[in-house]
Length: 162
Image (tube, rainbow, N blue to C red; front, side):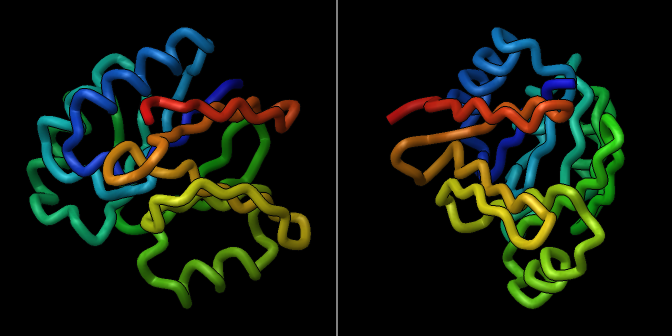
């Protein structure tokens, strides 16, 4: 199972479309958005792809984003999501609450913790937990996303734009 991980799209529809195109080319079957979607129009771009969204600190039109995500075939989990995909336990949060992020990472309950907020890509192992920040699709140089093959753990970092 190949999943796409994005964060901090901040309504930047051109870069969301570019990331979605790159992910489709790589056979992504599911997408995780780590927050700061920004608006319903951006959430609707994920139409036709199963997408799990969490809220970030810039997501204020929650009801509209939730409806748009559902219409697109996705699910808005709120501020935190726990997923089990391909037998892997995954936590997803935005990362703007550092104590909660550190508690989640340090719990040892997850194979992966996905987060955003910093606009800086990162990938590190803490204990048995891989901690991944896909970077950002807005206000970042370069704009990045990640494709993760869950069975193998192989990462394919996507350079969406400079």
